[in-house]
Length: 341
Image (cartoon, rainbow, N blue to C red; front, top):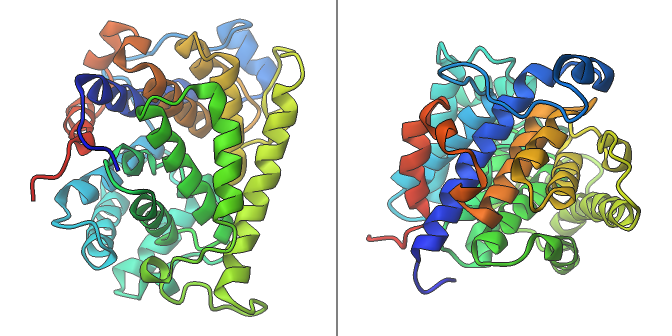
């Protein structure tokens, strides 16, 4: 729990939200291209300039904003208050005419069930650990809350659509990383701190937030259920640490930590991009956008991490005037303020 919020923290919160949107926008046109095709189109360093006015984003940013508004509207951050608001925001996104950015099938399937009024534990896609679980969790990391509340919120927002334990664990780690960076932790400290968190939480099932989500064939206990997710995240973090121990070959980061279509790989590969380019935030986005994998999600999370480390000074000044949803991103920066209710 932090006692107060400084201007620096608000700048970091803004840098994180806008960084997510910038990375998403840079990766949007490269998501389904090969690295060779990206190099032919943008050169050897990948895309480094935002295109358009407004600059369009994908469902990654749209759903992060949905999570942010649900958190902002919640009178108190407990599951009974937050779940209906997340449901409402997700369903509004699902039917929005702006939901035309190749949205993930898991999110659409789960939203269709949520729209029928099904309990979220039954509406969720139980076997999915897609990166949709953590591409949208950055707003949770902005909140000045204790680690247990952060964990519950991160896992709940993931669980409404992605019921796989790895989606839950990776979402918690993503939000935890943003929170650490806002509190002043250096980027290069994250792999060790996230690994320690994963080991510590390995058999912690948050029943007050997740209810009976764990109950499914072949699962003996809630602790066994959630341990599967943390174990997969630990393996991904292990690959990240191994990659960082070798010289950077300048190639596709997905070759080391995965293509990012699933949650733990999106986290690890985004961290790899952020850490390889910790002092050149735009290069971190470009590296994430220059992959054979889920380029927009990888670049978006890399932007959230580097932006949380550096604040808005990380980004070209003119970008914020052109990015889609700029007003919402600016307002949601206030999630980093202490609650007034």
